[in-house]
Length: 101
Image (cartoon, rainbow, N blue to C red; front, side, top):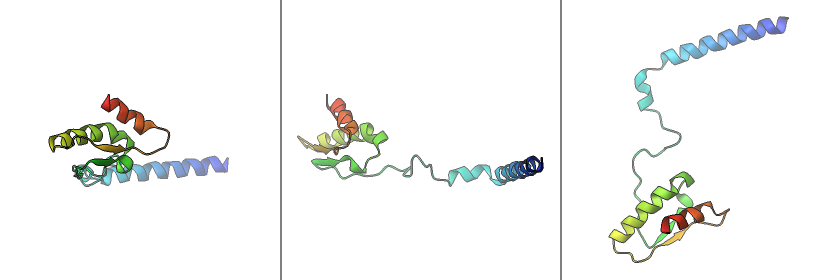
């Protein structure tokens, strides 16, 4: 019985602290926070060459980045581009093949 009372007391204190913490945050504070899913909100410049290594690209961004890279490479006169996708289980390889098909 004593444990339940202590637990309820702890839970009330925790909820009160959480509510106070949420109230202290100003509505403008979200602008200063970094999005954990997009640590680089500004576009990142990638040098366009005839070799493109996907090891530095997040898997969720591969399709968009490869398409844009190929468009930029073509506009700069590259007739061929080597895309390094790595070994692994072949997810990026299949994605690149679908883009090229």
